Length: 128
Image (cartoon, rainbow, N blue to C red; front, side, top):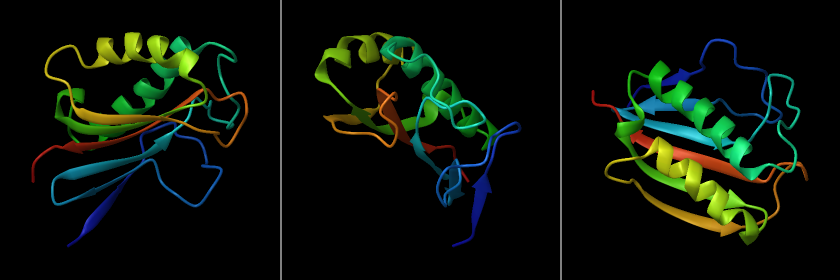
């Protein structure tokens, strides 16, 4: 099955060997997305709401570059550094998924940079 690499215009160089997204057989897999700027610096330190919005905008860009919309997202994996950020993450998440919600899970864990409070990975079905 052929796959295509999805790299939205203006994407910075990843800090590890991965790409922002991969599309295969109409399914877009969005890599774990952190609140990084193009130079891999964490944006909005201490603000889980702003970091979540930033992360979801990056994910939206990957999915749109692949030919889809946020309505095509079927699953999200959410990682937060502290449960105290859960309400802020959910507030922004609901803005990006106002209708039928995708399936998801959310866990508390450490992230690659201590200033990052949230990371999200997504799967979207955008057709063939």
